[in-house]
Amino acid sequence: MANILIIEDEEDLLLTLEYNLKNEGYQVFPFATGEEGLEWVSQNGPPDLAMLDIMLPGMSGIEVCHRLRMDERTRATPILFLSAKGDDSDRVVGFELGADDYVVKPFHVRELMLRVRAILRRSSVVPQLQESSQEVFGVLKMDRTRHRVWLAEQEIFLTAMEFKLLDLLLSNKGRVQSRDTLLTKVWNLNNTSVQTRTVDVHVKRLREKLGPVGDAIETVRNMGYRLRERPTDTETSTS
Ligand code: CA
Image 1 (cartoon, rainbow, N blue to C red):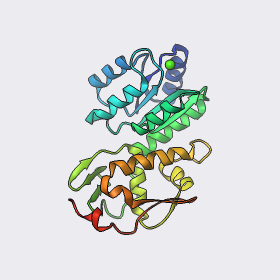
Image 2 (cartoon, rainbow, N blue to C red):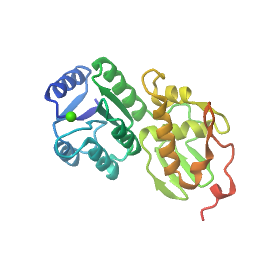
Image 3 (cartoon, rainbow, N blue to C red):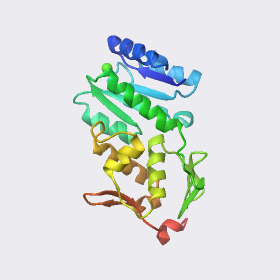
């Protein structure tokens, strides 16, 4: 049974979420402030999903996200933001900090439940059909089974979403993946429920994390993204 941490200061909404998530069979840990939520995490370890409101009294949801990402144990914990309309810039910051998804209030509880299920499904399941668990591209090395990635022998930490994105690009070297394809295969969603901007933000962040190999993810105008067929010399050398 998945553990879901919720941090939301609107009491009615918090109760609604708690009620509905429990109905779906999840274990729910609801808190009204970021401080209390982080305290729970420090005592109980990472939840399977953290649902964060952005505007909170005291520590903001963005700050909570930031702290979760800084902590080794929660670096890859899926994070979903509950954001009010007009929080656009916060939302972008949230994605840059490694949030996996967001919903804008007011939202339909039913839709949120589908998103939750999708996030938990993709974060818990190691992709099937793995020919080999290790993949090497220049100085980049991925271990699919252990969900770990190294850059020139230095481990880097990707969120569940970034990992799936990289995995898909690596498995399809030299072939363009459209944003719609990425949304379907990485996010398990069709393009009606998540904006294609989500893809762009994740690709941008993944590129940054991949350092010298980041440029191997090419933007194909009006099409999508593609990982170069072969690494270049700079992507192969460690200096
Ligand atoms: Ca709030």
